[in-house]
Amino acid sequence: MQIQFNTDESVEGHEALGRHAEEVVRRVLGRFSEQVTRVEIHMSDVNGQKAGDNDKRCLMEARLAGRQPIAVTEQANSLHQAIDGAAQKLKRSLDSTLGKLADQRRSAPPAAGAADLDSDD
Image (cartoon, rainbow, N blue to C red; front, top):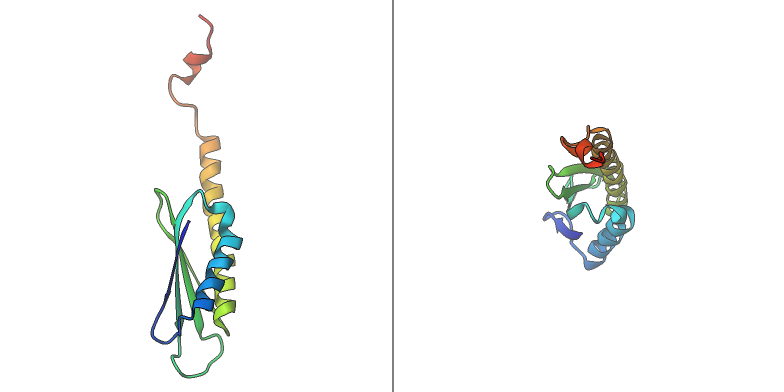
């Protein structure tokens, strides 16, 4: 799973913040590493240089092999809180999406001709 970290001009993209984001994503989403090819993280400060509550924004987008991307957003008082919250939201979304896909595969009718393979002629 590749992790791409981006910030806009209102956020200082410190290496420590990027490392924190990568560690959180690997810890929280590690079990999806077979299905997720890339996670993009976009950080921004909604108010720019002005102070404000819940003005740090993290958008996380997971790219699934052969599927549409899944994106979530979290706003919090700090960049670290926004990253942690977005990772948890993305985990729940991936659980739901991949769980539904697994259910569909389990309930799908057998392929045509599969019954012929079991018969002893």
